[in-house]
Image (tube, rainbow, N blue to C red):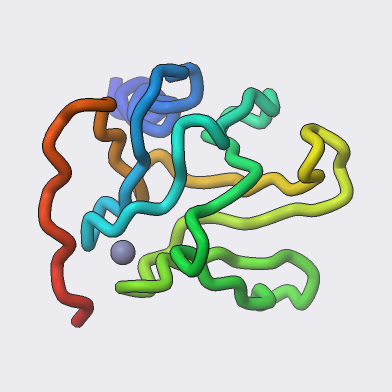
Length: 116
Ligand SMILES: [Zn+2]
């Protein structure tokens, strides 16, 4: 049962496509517009564009993949891949559902918390 629940949680946002904003789950900083979300089939929420300056990129430990972090609090978000041709921007932010929170359009945005 435990693994079933974990899978459900990981896939929480994969098939969510309604207007709104994805924010950092740790600091509430806006990261992605729902408009940038697309379905890649990878099982994780995918975005082709972040809000300007909201995401930092770092070369991963393995020296190949690019890790993405919240630029505000440096929480790990996932990885970014380029050149796959999924969308016009040719960029795929592969983001862990556990790192983000969805705020529906019209809902009040929670205040951005200070980075520690
Ligand atoms: Zn953050």
